[in-house]
Image (cartoon, rainbow over all chains, first blue to last red; front, side, top):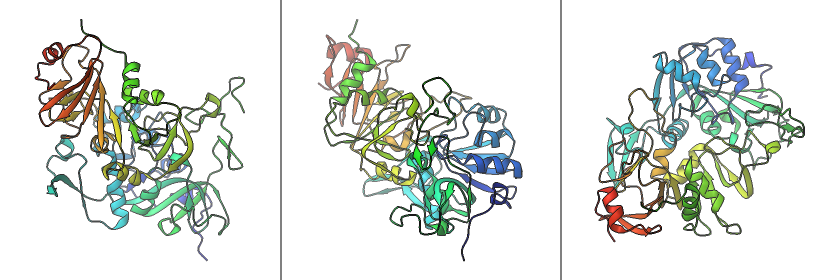
Length: 248
Length: 212
């Protein structure tokens, strides 16, 4: 019997080594596996290279991992945001390295790792600072830059539902980097709102087939959902609205 | 004094050039305003880089869905016909030439269509590029929406960009508060000037030769 489910968050992140490259899903807060990140903070692995589109928002999730001093290097496209004060401070203090990658190249480098591609020529970034020193080639009259895959030891991903084989479905734009990171990492660890019986997910609708997934842990339904239905009543950070009339 | 139109009027002007059936990506900032002026009743499909086609307007406050956001990480809605996809697919749509129009802001656009919009090169600034370089080469038509001059009066349409480039030879048209300019093999060509603005005045403001 194949059973990738684990009992709790501690078991989900067990064995993540110091110095690991860790892909963390999410675009801003959407799809960010906050519960797994909190478990990684408790686990304590240090000297991590983290791959994410951003570099943390506010003081939770990836920002908290950075604040805990566990990250040596960020590989991302857009670290500077209105609420990225944790990264900003560490970067200015020289306490975290930054590799800046155009977002589509970041996504394709992750995809390439999962797909066994050794490198690819992309038009994105040609003629810019971010392509300086990189091999270029003109193909059929268009200029391209050679980019290499980004492999990872670990991927931490958030999805809506899983079965015990690790098949995943996502929700809306929280999908973002999840499917490609799941494929690119040696060990893929997924948090889901709920684990459903094998066979309960529509095979036509499965986005990430279970072969990409190693561990699955259920963390409960998001605050804006009830019994699988959207009920709202939260702000963009998922905090329940308290003012009269805004509560559902 | 030259005639300048407001940011919102400019957004409406850009919107009026987008035909029904177009698949469009609106960049963060001023270009987002274009969505407010797409004619109701026309089916124009908005793409957001974080994985959706068929993006709709912001929800009512009580109906904010943290799983459903745009590239600026603001809450949005999904229209009937919307589709979700992962990030590599989303950027393949751009790079693969599947989007019709992309509207971006700019620090500078050169007469050769080079775009600078991601960094001022200021020492000590934390660099951030996001999807800018992908969007710059990511549609059949790349439109820039910007003021003609910076706040300090420097032209943003230039012979050659001095800020770090986002993309080379990628811009097809520039919508400014003074007028609209096409990028041609011979440089900027005036498409439309607002109010009483004359070709000579604008060419003089820019210090550039403008094709008629």
